Amino acid sequence: MEKKTRKLNIDIYLGAILILFSAYLYFESSKIKAESAKFPQIVIMLLLALSVIVLVLGIRKTKKPELTLKSDTLLNLEVIQTPVMVFVLIAAYIAAMNFAGFFIATALFVPVMMVYYGNKNIKAIIITDIALNLFVYLLFVKTLNVMLP
Image 1 (cartoon, rainbow, N blue to C red):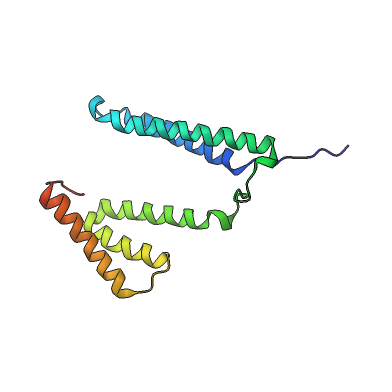
Image 2: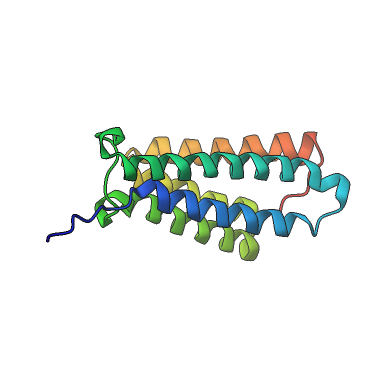
């Protein structure tokens, strides 16, 4: 007797990871003062609710394969290559921000992301980089008196 095996839908993995991530964020938000923690906790609970929905839909798609859309794909390197690379670049940006500060890290991050996404126009990259840093400086540092890292 041959047993037919069912592959788990990718949404099950995504939902489970997001639920764990939400739990971690909620735990971390409990370390903030109660008044300041309200908004992040509301956003985290919203993320948790949406994660549960993704998980439930993934379970339904696994039980009833006819619900699976053409856009649902198996987890493979081709599918996750861009999101993983962007995650790595953002992690490097955050690390650079801790060492070099916001403006230097941003001045490096913006061109790297623009080139990664295929922009080869050097003039546009430089103008965008300068304009973004200038806008943030004028709005947050000068106008709102916000100290950036």
